[in-house]
Image 1 (cartoon, rainbow, N blue to C red):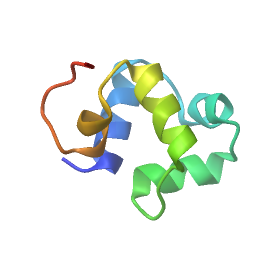
Image 2: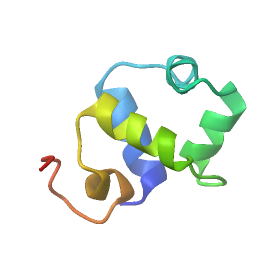
Image 3: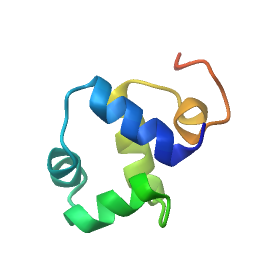
Image 4: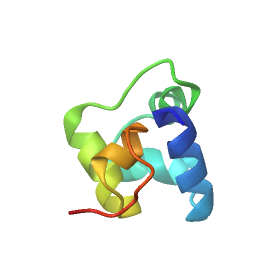
Length: 71
């Protein structure tokens, strides 16, 4: 699973809207939508914010691991 797929699944799992995620990250809605479409990627700071918000490891969020557990 790729980052775009993980973001969409985690957002839905948490009951958040794309608008709410964009606001959380301090970015425009279109910028967040591009993350979920896979046409752009979050910068390091926002990547960390996303992992913290969803309480998952960076490797899980990036699609490099199936384990959500943070170490």
